[in-house]
Each structure stands twice: as C-alpha cells, then as structure tokens.
Image (tube, rainbow, N blue to C red; front, side):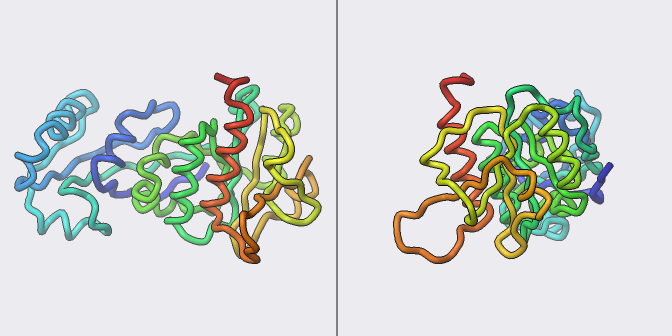
Length: 254
C-alpha cells in the first residue's frame, strides 16, 4: 500500500471534493480547516458548509489571518481556506476491485504533478472507473495534484500495480488492453472500441513500458489536423483518448 505524507488541501474545490467523496474510495480525513477571517463575509455559504461538515466528521475549523494561511499554502488560489489532512491509502490493485464492463486507465512516466493532475481531471470527467498508478507516482504531491485536477484526484478510485500485474489482472477480467502510441497503431477515430477497456498512457519522454506494449491488444494513435511532428502532452492525450472512447460507448453504457 502506498501513502503520501500529510498534505494541505488548498481552496474549496479541493476540500469539498474530499468531503463529498465516499470513504471507501478515499480514506483521507480532514484534521482541521483554517479560514481567513477577512473572507468570512464573502464566503458565508462555504463556511456554513464547512462548519456543518466539521460537526459531522469531527474536524476543527479555525479562524486566522491571511498571513498565517499564506505561510502554509504553496499556491495562490486557496481563497483564504486551507485544510490539513491525513495521508490517503492507495491500495494495490486486485481482481475484486475491477468492475465488469468498465473503463480504467494506467498512467506511467508523467513528468510533473501539474500534468498528472490535469490528466486525472480529464479522465474523471470522461467517466473513467479508476486510475492505476506505478508505486512511485505524483500523489506524493497530493495538494498540488488536487489543485491542478480541480479536486478530481480526491474523487477518483486510485490503485497501484506494476505494469505486469495490471496487464494480467485486466486480461483475466476480459478487458481490451489499449496503449497510446505510433508504431503499428490504428487511429482511435477509425476503429470502434467497446468497453471493457484498459487504456495505458505514458509520459512524453519515457513513453510506455515494454511489458504493456507486448501485452496490448491494440496500439492506438491520435490523428492530427495539421502536419505536426511533435507529440501532445500526456494530459492532452489522456483527454482526447478518454473522451473519444467515452463517445464510442456512451449509448451502450448510459
């Protein structure tokens, strides 16, 4: 099991994402929330929500000043509200955790927490059932990832597995394994792929591991609208592929 260090969630988007997520998906708990007292008047609804959740879940809400919050925060978009939280346990992937007829993604080799968070944001919006990660991943920077994912990282079911473990478990569950790439690929727009799908997306520099490429049922590519020789960012690729696969399956899986 993988745990990151205690983190600070900054801003209501990240904090409310955690508070509205079932503990069976994310067991992170809020210990205390700091609120800039100067923001009280303009954030009355958010503060009422936090106070109600504090009574329900047993955390503190503390009024303080802007200087104290700035000293804690790493970003500038917190809006005067930050939360100290426990670590989140990210369990190892098991066969029992895989839903039938689902859509899962493996992210490997992401270059920074902002790109990683942006990818999670798009995957969550496209209806991905869960994201599988290597043991070393950017959830060690959970606060930054939560901001860049607009809270999606706190809402998504996350698991860890090696490429071999993940490929074998999804193969046993009857999933089609797709890898994003160029060599021996087909256009994702020219062939229909039906759920259940396990999609693998690699980083711009390191790409996808040989294990996945050898076990893939199909390599898929994104065709461009111009003569562009570069590659999309991992986050952009995740968004395009996930929403195209969602589009292809949306009427079959309402």
